[in-house]
Image (cartoon, one colour):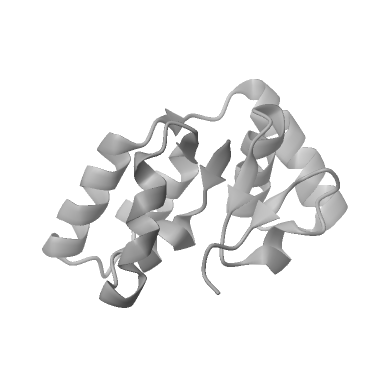
Length: 121
């Protein structure tokens, strides 16, 4: 079971990475509400991109941060010097026992007990 990181969703829009779209139809994938904010909140998003990304977020189950996720995100942010967004995404994966599917392995590999996967080689 995997938590799809924002960058994988963004890359999937590009023709050379369209194979990533296969990840989104699996029953074992989820996305953080934080990724939804990151992707759809980008200030230079085009209307075509917004339509595509909105359809992705309608397809993949979204996990909203709970108090437990926020509490662990605080610990992660302090211990691993993660960005605010990455600390919440990492905590979401940890609490829900998910691996993180991301291209930015270095953002998450240092988090103890967190499994990462880069589908882009």
